[in-house]
Length: 181
Image 1: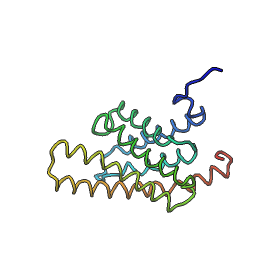
Image 2: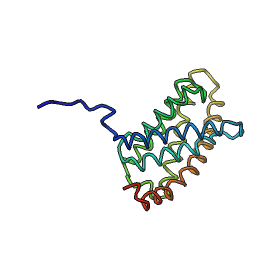
Image 3: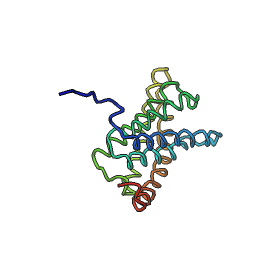
């Protein structure tokens, strides 16, 4: 009997991969469209959390949101969007891993407004960990690191929660149209 190796390509179907790729691309497109300076930190989390949660809700496989984060991070890095170089990939993936973990614990998150807000806010807020680690390594004053982390995480959580509020009605419409099982 012949053993076959399971790789990343065997994890998702073509349909799943296309859906996840489109969600990741839309994250980058929305970020590029909102590139103008709003002077509001965290505003890009609105569409990031929407597309990550929507992608994970449609593709019901572990690692789907992390895959969206990986693709969005690589695209952002290639296009020179964001600060931090390769850490952009880590920031997107850490949010995806939080979403995947939440869907593992409760698979029907996308049907509840409250759960979507909680998961979207948490996934958007966890990105501040990368920011704090970099600022500590650089040697910033601890008080400044804490102040910056509190402001950044509050705004990320607020915009992430608002963006995730759009997921339940979109998932309901997709189910009603027969596009999602």
